[in-house]
Image (cartoon, rainbow, N blue to C red; front, side, top):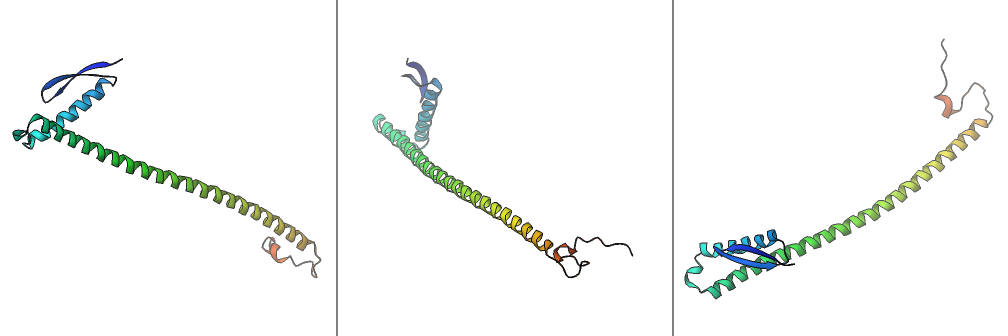
Length: 145
């Protein structure tokens, strides 16, 4: 259902009929009124007819629109770049996690091999029963003298 909204542009009350919300239509009216005020402030109205003034305002509005559209396009392209960068970083993160998992597994295997080696080393006969294997020497309790 269309809304009827009264707006003021250049001191003139204009009734707009639209499906848009009143706040949106009032915002548009304020924007156009501001553009008109800018032209008045620049004395553009003094020597031109209504048709030319309307065209100049239309050009100003179109200029603002295209600048905003270009800015939005740049922001969208930048957003896309960041989205791609996040995707690349997520992939790199997955690969690093896989590498970490592989390194942790390798460390676990290496520790197990080391323990097996130490156990085998401890089982071998020594020439002097009072001599501890080198890797266990630091663990020897020194008695009081």
